[in-house]
Image 1 (cartoon, helix red, strand yellow):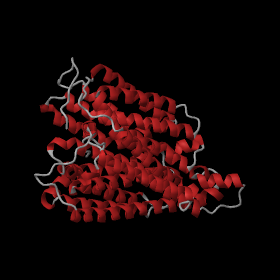
Image 2 (cartoon, rainbow, N blue to C red):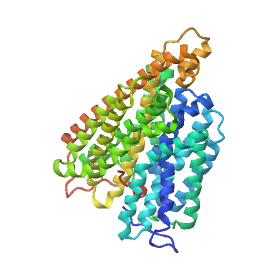
Image 3 (cartoon, helix red, strand yellow):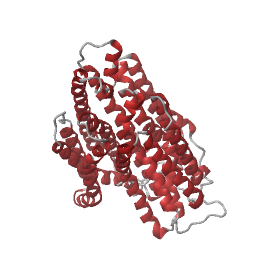
Image 4 (cartoon, rainbow, N blue to C red):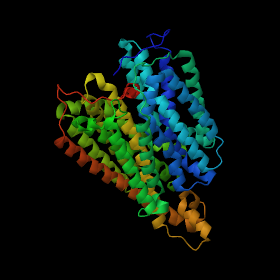
Length: 518
């Protein structure tokens, strides 16, 4: 990691005025994904959005957030972290205001993609501002606060949105984002000093373009597959083209002296196993949140606030599992057995949740949430440590960057895949009475619309939606189990880093990226 250089007139201080600004900015961008999940049924009703469009409303943000994260960190390093933070907050504030005015799903999807780009600028700048501003004796505590806020903000987004939707429409969610962004923007202008690395390497724009294009093609093809058909030339061609572009990204990064992400890092056992573990956890977690809040609101007819409160036990179990139980178990058994055990619990949790139906009580949901929370807590701590421990001290920022990238990428892919499985099964299993062709297609495209078309349509639609959700959660269970086997195989096939190893060089974007999350 390069030594931070500050422009004239700025210097390391106490950081007391900086931390509240960082907390608000970070909470705003991290909570936005879960907030839109909870608001999805309201958006579908108001904008007449079908299930595919709702998936895009949520995933457009997550996709651009993940795809631009490393590039945004590099921009902050080269041109100034305060400038990057200000630019990201301006985009976030203006985009939130524009989103409040959206009149159709296409407009909202486009704005969400822009908001994701703003979030990508904000997130890495928050941590790098801490590391360049706080004195050493207060830095560890400040980073710990940062990590706690990052970990808790998904639940904050659900609860805040639930409260807002009790009184106002889904547009109030963006008003809340706008208010938080404005507070952070004013605070940044007043309290956050500038810092930059004048020796930062040139931006890897080609690598960034390849990564965005590859991920975009893959996610687009997955989300559109229920409409186009999984075996259609458009779907298979899009997936194939996306994978080719991603391979091109890998080849390009191998030739760069300062890549955004050096693929050679994945030859290190701890780095590879930790990254896979983090990715698959958030693949399942965010996909699950997308499904379960719709189930609770549209099938069980719970309010948005009650739906949010229903999933709180997951966080109540996950936090003590990550902070208290996991370190003690790792000290006795080692990291890999604990990661494997955690993923097994996560897979078991999804297996339990895949049995939910229209008549389920809260008990099976609670049991699944407890298993999921305990498993994520157990696996997350050693996975994060494995990533950072695989690298020498001078490159700890690399581990932080990849940890965040794995989380956001897992979220984007999880929402895309599980939403697509849900919609595919829903369309295939829906048995409708005789309807005009336009009404029938509307019912097949949107469970929210079908649920308001009378009992003759709503009943079969509910059964089809539940079957789709069950199938998607079963996919999450099988995917987690498969990745558990991959983690175990990597642990056998790859070598650990030794004291004489030097990890491959990585762009200084890592210095501006995030620390491990709880």
